[in-house]
Image 1: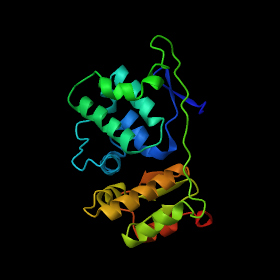
Image 2: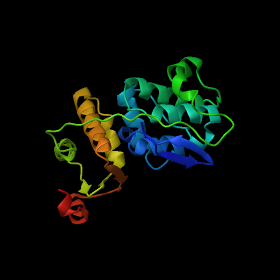
Image 3: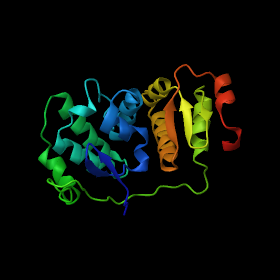
Image 4: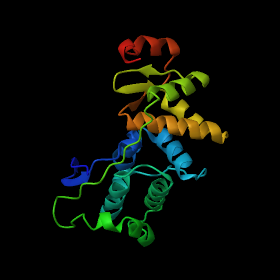
Length: 214
């Protein structure tokens, strides 16, 4: 069980599962900083190649939509959770404030733990993902090298041009998409954050990176 809660506008929500990385903050709060990467991340994870986040604004989430999104984001990203998130995003884009009953039923046991009249909600269980024989950075850095994508490596985060990363996540090559998705998930699970650095060059990446973290 995860006892960590975060306060948003006076209400407490469970911590997002690490596997969502910066996508969770983007979906729940901003809809600007990580937009292209989150859209591509969800397209591949949900296997919905036409999914589009254009027009979505996190501050347009209704209370019930926000509660359901919090319930989903507290769990490990997979096909089911990604499709649940895309369903909520589409509803917000369409100006809807209600939630799908069938989707809510999938998370009913967790939603009913969110009191409607007090400022406290549930703690959600966390999932752990590990590849003990593979350093979490290696798969991503290997792919980045093949794709000529510059990466500045720091102790707890990586600087990358997220627009370029999103383009690769949207590649027509499914093997590449899946490998990159898995590498990003490994980074998220290991606690690394991806931060946007538009126009990053390989030389700048080498200069900015922490040698001790490689």
